[in-house]
Length: 139
Image 1 (cartoon, rainbow, N blue to C red):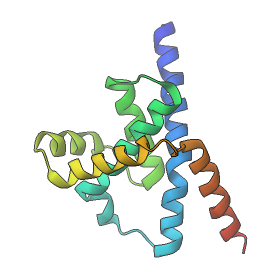
Image 2: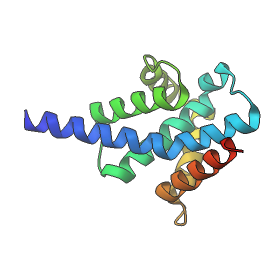
Image 3: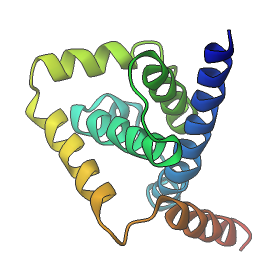
Image 4: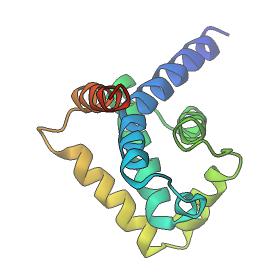
């Protein structure tokens, strides 16, 4: 029972951290583009990039996470960030990975490259992005 409570708490913390780090990026893209077409969220590159960024943000926040807790973080954060139901994103990721979809793999690699830069800091990115988004929306 205690293990379950700890897992729920970690999943919640990781999901919130991923959303806080990535949502400002999406908000800035929406400001710049006006709208992000629904088809974008089905693009294998975007799926790989976003899911890997969510994973990196989650691991940055809470350390080791895998299996069911990671799946819950990915699905929940995906829904929060994209505004799309997350019901099939896990299956989509598994199928793209199993098929060794090149666009999906490049999206994952690019997210890992972004997340691995020493100067890259999710907390700073999140705060900076949110401040810029808020200052633009108040103009």
